[in-house]
Image (tube, rainbow, N blue to C red; front, side, top):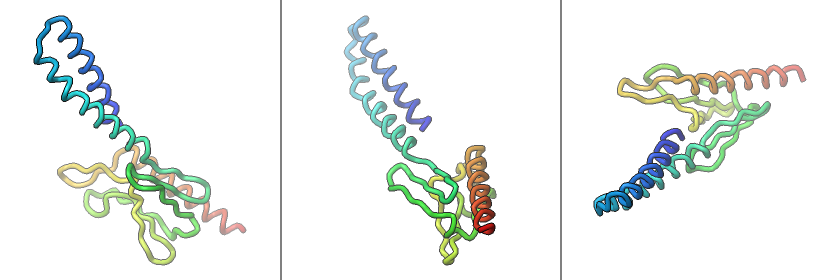
Length: 146
């Protein structure tokens, strides 16, 4: 999302700058920039759109998530046996939901950052994963009291 905002601002600013410089200097080469810069604006807008659509929502009884292109997925906490939150450089790159029926569902909207050495958990990943685990534990505690 941040990359989208940066690309959008850079494309818009550069387009305005190219028009102003062309008006001042009359240099036709600056107009060629106007053919390329809209691409930066379009890419920035798409990245921003994808970033705004992506996310994880945790309620008192379920977790829902959406990636930039796919639809929203939701799994009730009643179906989740446990939640695996990897923090190692190797292994799964994100949170895995282990369901009571034996299936494993990757929470695709919550992944670690990837670098040349493997995966690394950033603060946002850690914070959301911790909130998810706590919400699931609270659900299990409430369900056990019923």
